[in-house]
Structure formats: structure tokens, C-alpha cells
Length: 165
Image (cartoon, rainbow, N blue to C red; front, side):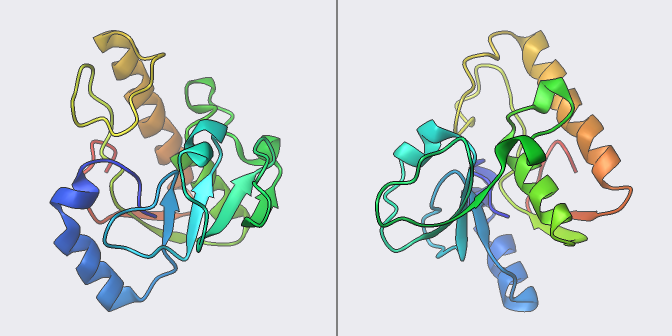
């Protein structure tokens, strides 16, 4: 999985090495990363999808999105994969991990899932709901809590630095 955190750029050599060694299926989350040709682009947010040129890309997307005509997309029921943790209910990274787990995937390599910082220029997709240091802290704690639960049956391997690893 390649998320849009800046470490997917800053630590690209780690991603390149992982791709060389593991030959994984590459799924980007809500964007098309420069320098990579993902096997799939995952979208669970309609605004993210609208910002992507879908020509030439295959998508995994949730049912809350209406794909444009001609879009190559596999659709998944949105409510089946959103997090039960209210602080992460629409976190695309967590949603994708839950979808992959439902498909039987038990080892996931993660890149660019850096974590959020309030007023950070490094937030690739700033969340307007996170308007204070405390809200960002609660959000990041929620990700850590959800990932701890996921790790009970799924190995999460952080390829790039992350506050969640």
C-alpha cells in the first residue's frame, strides 16, 4: 500500500527495494504516486476520486463513489469495510486494510502512512476536521489503537517511517 504521506517521496528508495524484493501488488490510497504504476488505486472518498485522472488506472472503490463512465473499477460495499472505531470511520488506509483482510491478506507492506501533525506542511491531504493539536493527537491515537487490533491477525510492515509503526 502506498499512502500519500511525504515519506513515500522522501524514502522512495525503501519502497523501490521492497518492490524489487517482494514483487507485491501495489495499491495506492486516494492518489496516483509519481514514479510508480500502481496495480490499483483505492478510493473511499469521492473528493479524492474526483481529483484523479482515471484513464489507464484500475480502481478499487467503495460504494459511496460513483465512477465515471469507462472507469475500470471493482466496487465494494462501503459500510462493510469502514472502521468500527468512530475516530477512524472514514480513514481510507484503515478501510483498505480491512478490505484486504476480508480477502484473506495477512501481510501488508505500508508506505507513506506517515501520520498527521497539526499545522504540518507534510500532511498530503489535510483534514479540516483536525483543527487543533489535541484533535490530531486523538486521531493518531485512534489509528494506533485500530492498528494494534489489526495486528492480532495481520502483519503490518512499515516500509517508510510512520508514527504508527
